[in-house]
Image (cartoon, rainbow, N blue to C red; front, side, top):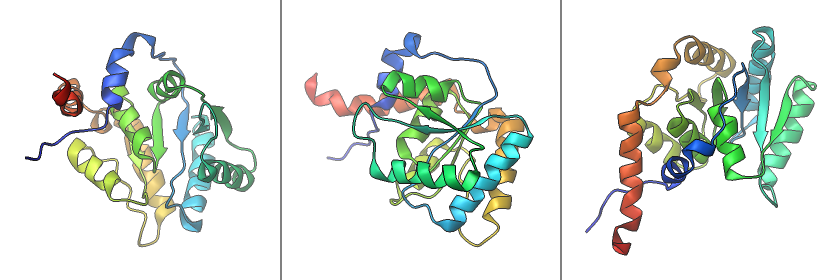
Length: 196
């Protein structure tokens, strides 16, 4: 028989909820995407410029305890060079630092699956970009949130900035309700039914 399940990150976040720091501030976190191309890079650079004009402090979220992903390193270098240093780097080295960074953000923009899940479970508005698998689309369908940015068909810079404006101005539309977050935890529990 087949049973739907979900990633275990919501369970980890719930278990360590009291240890996830939430700091006030206007920072917007950006993260890479394994499906990024030149158009997406240019759109992210323009988003960084727009965020700085809005005084929203863009930061590139990277990190790992050891051996950071090669595509993250190359994306960070390329974005830093293209943005002319107009973005700060936020390097996290633990799961709690990672969750705390996302929980403290005003907005997350990412093509990363686990970054998006972290934003959903911590109540942070987020936008998702293309990835290299359909799991991002499946995630957004499951969550029922409007943060999917279509990266094909041109005018990506305009669409990304417009959707980011909506997510900042109407944050409640881009955040999961607690009942829905509990639903994710319930789905994640299915991974452990065989242990009971």
